[in-house]
Length: 405
Image (cartoon, rainbow, N blue to C red):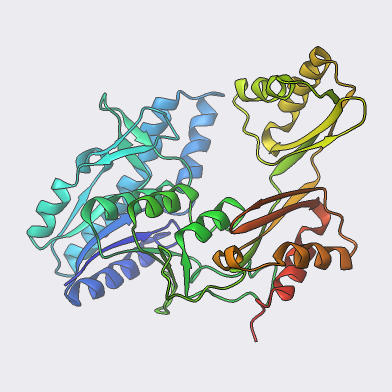
């Protein structure tokens, strides 16, 4: 007997027919001799509809009340699944976030999980019940309902699995695993049987949308094996595990891209201690995150600083940097929102040379100019013009031997 946590996303529970199909899959896992905990998202489209209703009433709804409102989506699905399972002859019990005691901080609409007090779940499992838990939600120290932000049900499932010491956390979604690239962009992308937490973390942060990045962080921290599978077939998906010396170490596991960043360049900055700190402190004080940074030294003790920010913060960041540039005596500020970040990721890169050279030469062969470069032990990222993002992904996928036969 094993303890399995299964998470089903919004499309998997999109209507009553699909909820009944989920109930059958859950029952099959239970009948195989496993204890089963199910974590659910709201029905597809429900959260957006709730947000739209709130925005009709207010241009800026209170965040605490939005958490109360949005949590009702998952409350509906857990109750419906429990009802469906009971109808099939199984003992089932649903729990909301505050009943499980998924404890979070008090950051409304983007709360972070601090602890999972899973005794109610353990008691129900001991009573041979199938447990159904509302994802995406928790409770803060003052008893307020909180929500975890978009994709938060993935994080809920991994957190519950960690608290229970589950044998596996199965994430059921509308894709059947993790691919070497987005199959909608790269027709020859292929499904990976297994990837490490570290690679999945990099791929999630760099554009792979299979798993919410915070769930991967949680899985890595607590060594939770995650199995990404499709709700609509019985095929094996992709296992996400801690690095194993015996597992296949692909040179590059995947190619990803994002178009969500913008680039800002400050030219002829005085090359003096503390000047760069003034630029980035001003940006940080506005709550704007910075990703890639490069600095080019000029003659006469001058330097150029280029960095990327989220495209949603681009206009605000540009205003802040222009003001700071005047204060520090920089010559000018320029920006570009039409960029993309293309990345190759793989644990095998740690022990292989020439990955960067192959990436750069592959892009050069198609006259794709590289504006910025960022590296880690298992990842190389290049900023290119936005219009070349898909092409760059396709040719790199081929160059690193990832194309399916």
